[in-house]
Image 1 (cartoon, rainbow, N blue to C red):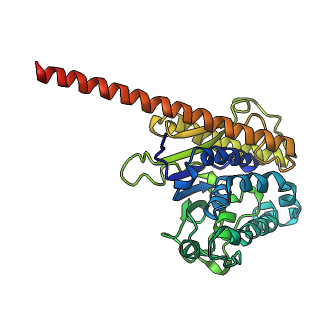
Image 2 (tube, rainbow, N blue to C red; image 1 turned 90 degrees about the horizontal axis):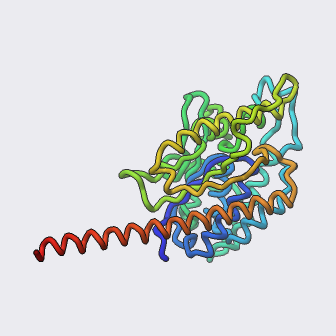
Image 3 (cartoon, helix red, strand yellow; image 1 turned 180 degrees about the vertical axis):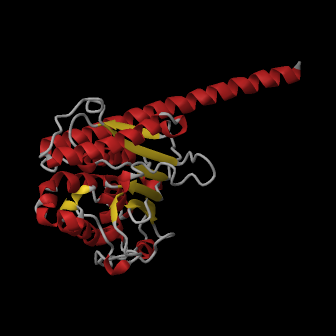
Length: 322
């Protein structure tokens, strides 16, 4: 079956975003990925958008995420800077990892020209990357900020993705170099908009959009052991509380739910940066299974609608003939 999807949207979810690589494999197998033109995401979803914008193959995306040592992202702790920088860990290692992924993408493009890692959104468009839109939270303006070739063409993509990934209190808040686009303080886009499914709904619900969320059914509603002196659990509880509120809003809106692949990621914490290879492989499998199940249901719905429409046409034709 030919699918209409040209826009992909990815929810934030920390290390759980590994599951998206499994989903991408299924999109590739069903000839969906080749038709994708636009990408939007927040936090971990912004990473998925970045590698797809850079035209990495599905198997390469999986290899990158499985082989990455996420512990390296939390090697530079700065507890004495918490009061001034509003976070425990620097974003330096994370930003270096993102920049390396951009540099290594040169082979994915016909011209073979090298990427420096400092490309702007305008540069991405010029080089033939897929259109990428990411979101971060602007604390000065107290609102969500979109970063894209339309809104911020001169902003470096690596900076925008870093801003989108800056989990509040866990990572130090982000300020754009050279005040481009401004000197504001930014944190994770998921603080206000963790699932930007409406990004491409310019004229109502866009049937060409397919979204992906990470559902922790076994964790929501379970009381944690949070107390004073447990920083990681405190940061995790904040993150999951914000995510739960936004997921509840999604569940109340059928038009979004019907175009969303919900990936059950079990009880793994989104900020478990010590996640091992076995857990990553499990997440990959969850992404594959959820996407396959969604497409089967989508196929059924489409065929059911066709049968109903065909029946209605026959009934109407019968009335006319009578």
